[in-house]
Amino acid sequence: MQKDRLRYIAYVRKSEERKERQELSQAAQTKEIKRAFPNINIIKWMEPESMSAFKPGRPIFNEMIEMIRDGKADGIVSWHPNRLARNELDSATLTYMLRNELKSLKFCSFNFDNSAEGIMMLQMVMNQSQYESSKQGRDVKRGMEQKAEGGERPGQVPQGYMKVPVFDSDGKPMLRSKDNKVIMHTDNDPLRYDRVKQMWSMLLSGNYNASQICKIATNDWKYITRTNGQIGGNPMHPSMIYKIFNNPFYAGYISHNGVLFKGNHKAMISLDDFDYAQTLLGD
Image 1 (cartoon, rainbow, N blue to C red):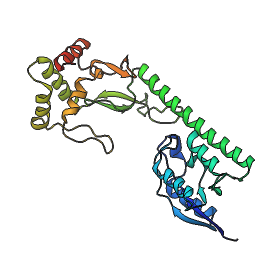
Image 2 (image 1 turned 90 degrees about the horizontal axis):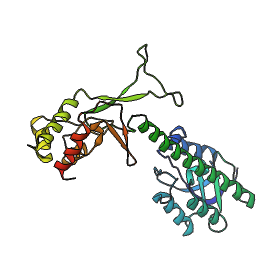
Image 3 (image 1 turned 45 degrees about the horizontal axis):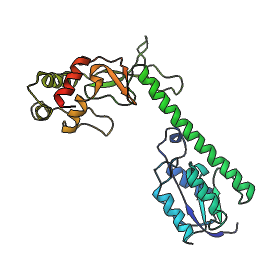
Image 4 (image 1 turned 180 degrees about the vertical axis):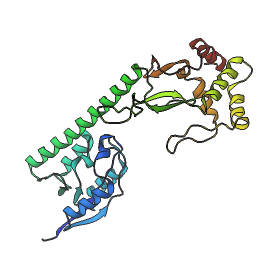
């Protein structure tokens, strides 16, 4: 097969969006490009982009566009159009450049013809990707809101608590029907619950301020924060003590988008004590 002498830039992107985690990895995308187009002249492999294409402003994507505008390259090769753009601005940039500087676009999993009809189909595919991203964002937001309404805090819980699996009558973890993931609920952290509750008692006594409590927790108790993956496992930081004392979660409530929902977890203090604590902190 005759070698394509146009100068191509290979673009690989792996977003952290949940749905896209099921798509090809960066290494797999690179492998597919090399397999599908062994005879094209790739002059540069862009450093893999980790930023989502749902919003404009990706530095590596912008660098690639500038190379083409400066006449340093003629075409782009990628695994699929949604690797290049999932927003209106970047989609418009690419399709407009196809009339001028951008001579060719090649994809492993999409057949593109640089014609009026081909550009229209490309726009439709990119618009569909944008719609799916927007819908996914709305679904995630609604799911988090429903979780808060049901009394469960979305995401991680504060110090003194932890997320644990919900078990069925047979002692097996219960799974969500929509994605087969383990259902989690909030429980007391046996290593930290009593210590955090003691911090609240010290503050409410009026004999200690937040800074003093933080020093006691760090120096005397050797308090270490809960770990979550690579996060945590550190001594108490002054900013964290204020996050604890300003969080209505400890009074049994979940704050989500400025609205308080009654939580299913065990409260450390009463709501009156929480309000009193805010006056002690000067809030």
